[in-house]
Length: 387
Image 1 (cartoon, helix red, strand yellow):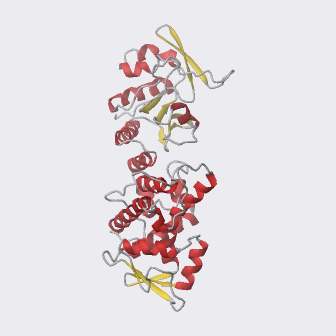
Image 2: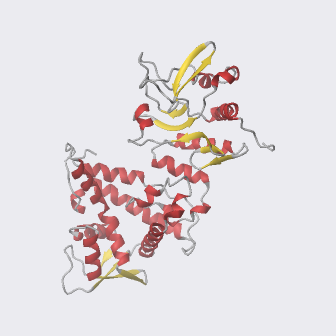
């Protein structure tokens, strides 16, 4: 669609960044065994509403700022107004009680909570919730009358939905009260997801200690906009790491305290992605330094691997430079920036001064054994005896 306002693009981006809900995931203790099935229905509904916000932001009372505006404060306030639905649903469950697949809500408490949450003209949000299948008693498209003490919220087409919503918010509040479990994998990586209103991440309701590592990798790739091919590559790269002794994985790869491989998706404020250009998904960077010592072994590897070592990666951005590395390969000297050379990339676009490509697309599952062979040579990794 052609959009007129910043908030329209933001709503669409939010819908697209909502993580897919796995067909099955281990729910938290205390939730019913079939909770993932109900949460999927809730998740799909919220995603549909965000796409609808992008089409008609006025109907939700979103703050409209023209696309040509460069006022960062106004744009931020506009984008935050997307949280109106998230906040309104929370106010339902925070100010009411579940009774027979319904939420009975105290109007006085609801109005106070809505005001505290910054949701002006709440009747616009309620109208859209009704359009999406909710039933709200005594609501006729306008603010509730003064004679109303309680109102009832339900979802007739799927009665379990209202309790599903309450359980989601209860789990979210538990996490925010004790954020220690958010830091399981990797260090505080998903803190941003739990803090970000409107994400409706299924992991809020999951027993995350039981989630397989492959699922974390897939979710992080989705969050960073990496392609399915790229995600499959990252999962295969992780599985291959299990062939080695002493490798620990926390999003990045370590042997004891020494970092072997760093992961990074696309983040606008990331210096590395600035160097690599915005169209490139920066994924895995191999820490290699002593290339000259094993250059003869590199010469027996596939051409794509050899090309990693026949490029000058240095941008001569500062002198002296403490991160610059140098090596010799086939009797020729090369230099590289320790920040980003020897990176495994998808869709690389960066070019050298003479116009040649600085990087090649390294997302190839068949190259993974060779990438790990390089790490063997550099860091002295040992394969497990039964591998």
